[in-house]
Every structure is written in structure tokens, then in C-alpha cells.
Image 1 (tube, helix red, strand yellow):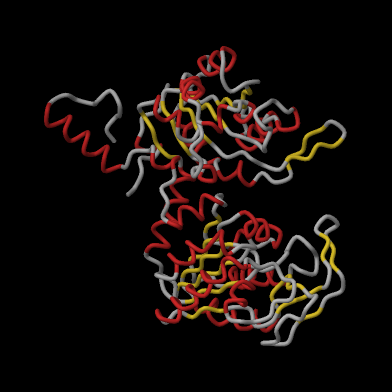
Image 2 (image 1 turned 30 degrees about the horizontal axis):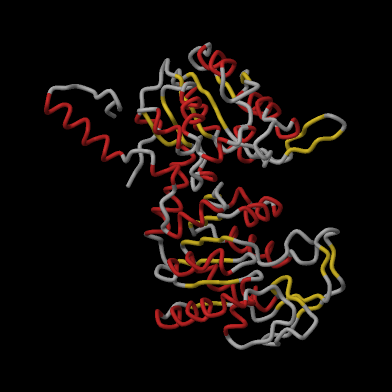
Length: 428
């Protein structure tokens, strides 16, 4: 069901409290804070710019890092306010706290088209506890609530769920609308062939996604460490590769389901293996590629897919009309173990006829490192949120936003009874 968006709400002269995801990486060198990747800030610009253009008084709130419920100068959002101001080409005010008299005065002194960014929500432990009193204090800062932070929509926190119960008018932002369109509508009714690529470390993180996508996909490609749990399910040796023995039966059921549905399920036929890997220093001992169908010998660990596997992936990816990719093919953070992931990024980007959707923190990171992000149809800002959404779980940050149909029905009832607009919502 389509959700009410900011385009359905009259915002001029109103304080619009917007939950954004400005959880960006910041480096601190000699007392200076430097944002190393502003992708998430840029992603929400269409929403902020639209509200500014329409005369809203914009109050932005976000978390940054994990300050454990107390102020931490290194996790202040002040540098984000500066970067946002640069991107908007206008001043962005900053509040030293996200609640209290100072924040309220800053919000209520805004003029039409002005923007205020609040300090890190997680400087208060009540935020993650979804504390009603804290939620009520946040609600004092706005007249309309907007959620544009898909990456945190799966968390029932004060800023994502609790505050919505204290503000009658609620909507999603333009970024959230795009997320729901591509992860919802495009994957619910994909152009075919539909190819799914899943990687990463754990089968347990994605088994429900695998189960749901097996009902839709034409081809399912599995890489990363999770592939070796599937190896175990096939009775193959995996050496000391990362596996989940307690998920072997789940992997076996997935293999059986794919076979019964006639879905092509591709596992690595060769791997790059090493004897030692040091995650701290980001280095490995000298490695080698296994031969196609060769099992992984004792004492060795698979850390990437091999060239024969990439060759097998080429055909379905070139023919695909919808591609969904979540999770890297190996330990891409370490040089030498990244070739498979970057090769997959290139193959996905090369297919300009397909709708390509990439979700998940690590695969998105790899995509940006590859320099191919601008050739992908849509890159999701959600990691855990995208997985839970694909599993079919209701996301608290989305559930609290009314459907468009609900609003249309309220408006129709009001018109029929002659009551006019209700106090809670303005008709679209």
C-alpha cells in the first residue's frame, strides 16, 4: 500500500520534524572532523530541498554512531550541519541538544524555508528505549512528522516510531518513497529474468530472504562465506572456512526448494583460499585458487570466489532484466580477497537493460569503492532494514505512517458528512 508522502501534505509555515539517516563516517585528525563519505546526506537532499522550496520550517534529527546514551564530542552532528549547509548552499542552524528548552526555542524561531539540525539523538538513552516522555519532547519541536530514514525504519525507537504517536500529521520523505518502490514494487513484480545475488558471512542473516526470493527469482547466486554452509549441506569439505553448522539443514531445505521449483541456484565452483587471515592488519598468507569442483583442503579457508564461478555468473547476469544484489562475494576489505566482489559489481553495472537494485551495507560499500555506483538503478540506504523488509516483516518506522488510501477514505467521509478536514490529517 502506498504511504502518504510529503507531497500530500501542506507544509508552508509549518515546523516539519524529519527523521533522516546522517549516520556517516567521520575522521578526527588534529582536532578537525572530516566526513569521509557523505552519500547518506546527499540521498536525503531531495526531501530537504522540496520542503525548503515549499516554505516548510525544517527540523532534522538523526543518530550518529553508538555513543551509549551519553554525549561524545567525536559523535557530534555539528560537522554534518556544515556539510549539509554546503550541499544546500544555505545556512543550516544547529542545536546543541535534541530536546529541551534550547532545542524548542531554536525550532520555534525558524522562518519559512529555514533548516535546523538537532544534536545526536543517541546522546540520550531514552531514544533507543522508545521512551514515551522522550518521544513527547521530540514532538514539541514539530507540527508534522516525516520519516525519511529507511535504514533505521526497522527499529522502534523514539525518533522512528514513538514520536509519530504525538503528531497527527505524518508522512514519508522522497528517499523513503524510493526505497519502498524499488524494494517493494520492483521486486514484487520483477521484469524477467530475475536474478538474485546474495553474499555475506551468515546464512542465518538471510535464510528468510532466501526463502521468500525463491518464490520469485529465476536464478539465485550465492557467494561469500555463507556459500560454504551450502557446501556442507551438499556433503563437501570446507577446510576451516567460516560456516554455520547449525544452519546446514536450512541450507539443505533451500537447495531442495530451488530444485523443486526449477530455479537455477549457483554456488561457487572454485574459490580463492588462504591458510591464514589477519582481519586486524587486513592481510592474508599467500593464497591460491581451487580447481573447479575441488573441495577445500584441511587447514585452508575460502575468502573469495574464483574465475570459473565468475564465468558461470556472466550468462545469467547478462540476460537478466531485474537484478537484486545483497552481500559481498568475499572478504572484500582485504586486498587480494576483493576480486570476486568487484567483478560482480562490474557485471551488474554492465547490464544497462536491467533494473539493478543493490542493498546492504557491505555490498554498497564495495560498489562505491568500485566507482560504478552511478551505473546502478537504485542503491538502498538500508542494511538490516532492507533485509527485514524483504523478509516481509512490518517495519515500525513505516507502519506508523498512514496509507494514502486511509487518508483518501477519511477525506471522503469528512466531505460526505460536511465536517470538512479532520483535525488529524489534511486531505490530499
